Length: 384
Image (tube, rainbow, N blue to C red; front, side):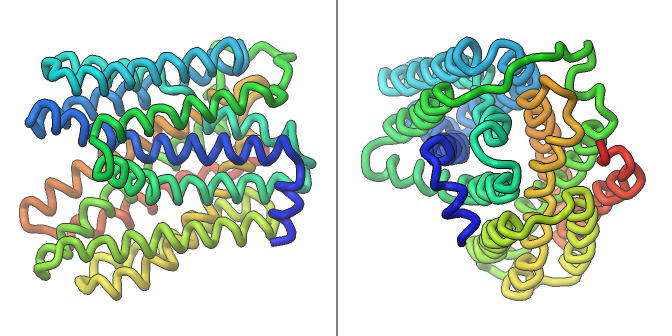
């Protein structure tokens, strides 16, 4: 842990780490907060689904646009207004839900919250090189990868706990405040000067960026399929809730491995390549397994491989993203990951619904294999 004690010795690094915690926790909790709030207010799961779809579509599709705006104008003039605008829309959603507003209004407000969602995590990644020494960056990126895993696990638990103790709309308010608070912390930190105006292609003008985006889409298609296929397999044995065990094994292994990788620097391109290949290796056996304990054991290894890819991506962005596109570059990965996850989940759901759970469990291997093919074929583009 010496690397992490050194990393967090500075006040600016601690502030940035706290901003990242608030961002990952808030974004991890918002989906459940929106669903609980809208379903409680409308009594309609379909309206809740439309509200979540509107939020996800707005936050995902336009993320690179918001990232480019933040790159151009900086956190004070762009990130903070986005955070306040998104927070205001979500607070309005909570109030409208409390007042029994119509379903269409709830969907519109959720969509507005997504359209203005602040690229907080992308901005935090841009700031890390400004507040720590170069040799500390691997540990910083390890922290970011760890927080992404914890946010996905702790975020929904946080939203559910607040909803149970207070109300669904109270949970949404708590979730909406967190990213805004993170943005307030981040705007006080140094932002890189914009010395070069990116070309019309922005971040995607870089061949290396296109490689990361394509690989990310395949990787997250596999993960989306996994999240749908595991409950289907567990349900066949009469215990759908048992799917939480292999999913927790994957997330826990990824979080712990991220800390290890962050403390042990390695060439980012090599770690990314080896991690991508290892993910394929550990995804292939899944389709042959139907016991949740065996699936959990394999997914521990897959989670460790995923962490290698995740940590390496943060470092590779420093190499392949064109100057002046730091926030936009990360948001392209967000968009690619969300699109891939949606496609993988939809296909796995169709297969599982048709009685082909084993085929659905084969999709993670397909997605990770597609990602690995991209990485191997285009590895030369990741050298900068």
